[in-house]
Amino acid sequence: MIKILAKSIREYKKPAILTPILVTGEVVFECIIPYLIAQLVNQIQAGCEMIVIVKYGAVLVVLALLSLLLGAMAGSYCATASCGLARNLRKDMFYKIQGYSFENIDKFSVSSLVTRMTTDVTNVQQAYMMIIRAAIRSPLMLIFSFVMGFVMGGRVAVVYLVTVPILAIALTLVVRKTMPIFRKVFKKYDALNASVQENIRGMRVVKSYVREEYEKKKFHVAADDVRADFTRAERILALNNPIMMFCVYLVMIVILTFGSYTVITTRGLDLNVGQMSSLLTYNFQILMSLMMLSMVFVMITMAEESAKRIVEVLTEESILKNPENPVMDVKDGSIDFDNVSFKYSKTADRMALRDINLHIHSGEVIGIIGGTGTSKSTLIQLISRLYDTTEGTVKVGGVDVRKYDMEVLRNQVAVVLQKNVLFSGTIKDNLRWGDPDATDEELMEACKLAQADEFVQQFPDKYDTWIEQGGTNVSGGQKQRLCIARALLKKPKILILDDSTSAVDTRTDALIRKAFREYIPETTKIIIAQRVASVEDADRIIVMDGGTINAIGTHAELLKNNEIYREVYTSQNKAGDNDEQ
Image (cartoon, rainbow, N blue to C red; front, side):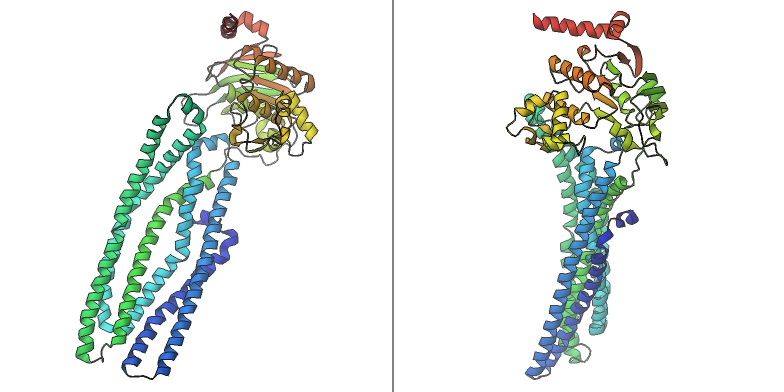
């Protein structure tokens, strides 16, 4: 896990190495200062001249400034290294996700991926910051202060050997108690983010059904669950401070009591006032170091679970890979399904598609119709290799899709999915997802084919109109037409519309299909639809039922011979007649 995370340090290795070096110098100077103060106290007690005090004072100021300078530089380099690691982790995760197949993405929820790229990365960043600074500083300070304590205090410093283990054991127990809580809370973060994301995405539905109070309660439960776990952890962690202060005051009492007694009875021979004052200073340094170490352990405990979740994303390998010598040219838009069966997971009980045998000629218009859950979308997702078949082969242009370079294949198979997505940016920006080099004239031509140019021209800024995130400032039908235009700009050999005209009226739907026939006759067109009217003029219509092909034929043939198709057609025409009445 550490090796995988360390790969993301990259260009920030230098500040990561310099930070502990600078911290070491800072600690050395801090530990020398109490020693010199003790010497100064003894000199003053012995009645030294002012020049001696000035010299000691000057040296102490220089040491303090050097310690401050090294500490500031260490802090700056530490911030650079930790923020750089966080940046690279987010970048590496994002790039990795872009290479995932649909099957990989199905393993992670969207909210979980968001949490991993935000909260989890922040936790790892903070832990890394503490590791390269506090986790170096605290042990060094602990060791140097121990050594200097025994050098200055002799047998009186034995008190450290009693109190330090007590504090260490108590803090270890605190950390062990909080570990399971922090490990559990991140899954609840996922649930909280899921609740927020789902609510915002479905805000129009929430308001339409007046479900605001229900959503508030659902969010409250998720938020309160996270709060409860963190409260439990913080209550336990709150014991750190009183435990530490107890040990600090205990040591102070012992040093002041036995130290004063030793100073008085030996008249400063075994222990003098300067040594006793330095013992008190070293005591604070030792106990503060232990306190800081406990916080480091807690932060590392939190970050350990976050690190595992990040590594899961970074080590997830895409199920779909390019072959060693991929085919780089798609000959035509012919499609062949040979004995294809498919299921979404190896552990799934049933096949989503079974025994599919289908042969589509280049340039054909194919309609696909069927009830909800009949795997219509699943069928077409195998063509552009968004999933791989479980059994059998899918061929495009006479070549198994697994032999193509995936980028080449997907550039020739344009899919307008069921869920039409527009991104924040202008209409031009969104259209150029289809072809980054498309001219304005090409954009307009594609929009005319998709029956989108008419409404775009009515916007004040026309093709420079800003589209809000998710396309919330355009209607569902407008969004669908822009997505179709975007797909057309790819100039594909195969165009697939997955229920992509459901939000447009029948007249516009007919105009889109007419434009396809006239202007892109060589492109294979597959139209998945719920309306019979959207596919009735197709060369052939496929009727799907329960993950299998129930029938294939023209509109007239299916109307005559297929019960499922006839039932759908009759029910929709009756509905239409009733609407007219």
